[in-house]
Length: 393
Length: 190
Image 1 (cartoon, rainbow over the protein chains, first blue to last red):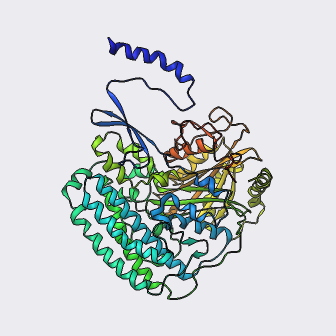
Image 2: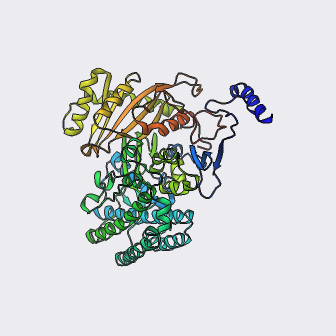
Image 3: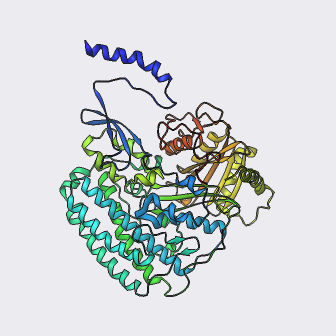
């Protein structure tokens, strides 16, 4: 009796009560078979975001990502600050990769204002950006490991990450939020013995991350959990507009460092890593291969870098752009990171849009999770290289 | 930012878009020029080429033509949206939506970003979803704009007609103020 009554009463209620709801919200009828689960926003497995998952038994039938719990209005804040005072707060969305998120901003301002960057600063920028990419990827890899139940994979990257954080600290003075890139170059030159220390630590780092293959990537448990789960085909990866490691794991060779080189990337031999499988395993392996490639790039940059020279072209106080707009993009740890800066001859940007890789890859999440088992959710979710704070901005 | 600042901005921005036609078209990058020529040949007066720079081009269209223009651009080889930014111009009572389109499948277009811009009318007293601030959705042409358009809807109040899922994304469900990226939404203490 009670089973019959419940749907009837909910049917009667829902049309009336939905009239009072704000647009876009809807009440759903109680259904016995499909269960709705809230994964997050406090759940450690989801990061600062919520996934509204509907399960039929053990299978996910619908997934609705609900980001926004760490939305800080970076784009609005940028409209109130001038081009220089925007630097420290713009790196906040992804503090582990702060050099790469400031990169398109600095390139954009340089194009707007029309200044050249000294040659030595260009190389130091590449070194800092590659070190930062590894720092971010190590952090991500640590979380990926712990959510697949591999505690050693949490400890090793979190420990090895310190090697590169020490280098970045030598360069910029700060461990994570560097604010190292400024329009016109970098904030300060590196200490005298930096090149030797950098080469030594990067070589040791490379040796260490090669050991991850033995405990993680060749581990039969990881392979069993990630092989053939959440397969994203090449066509769908393009259609969904994914970027970064997600795109390259699906067989699309697109790395902005190679396709549209910025600063001195065209003078370095950059190899982009592509895997064809498109499953969670490929998506977890491509960032690791990228770290090995970053070590190569850093060694090349150290060799080719001019040994002396200026590192910063000074701007006039309160730099202004013309009536213009720019769109610049770089390859960050999570894929393409673009900034659309609209200038109106004022010291502040009229509009600053940050298009981040995490936000662009979010669209693939409901697509991949539909039809998966609930137990595979962490393997698929973290393989997307998603950083909630960056996606929310 | 005070309202007098906004006035200047809006006037300046409308002037800029008229400029490129008056300029003599010299020294323009050849490949980028060929892209915009194709669009202009197809649509004629309906499109306005805002600028042609190295690796970056921009086309302004009216909102009636935006879907056809997007379909044509997709046939040219652009296959995904990098970014969708909404820009508020209170003085000309318009909100501009700029789609930055790129290509993964065509290697010759890999460097290119084509910006397709269109404008919607802007209401001083916005009722997101229920007023005249509406644009046709490009989600059927470029699937990747789905979340970008949802963000634009909540941040600037532009309702995308034909979008399957025009809901809040980043803002809380109980947000009761005007869309926050509009210029008349004040930042406290500034």
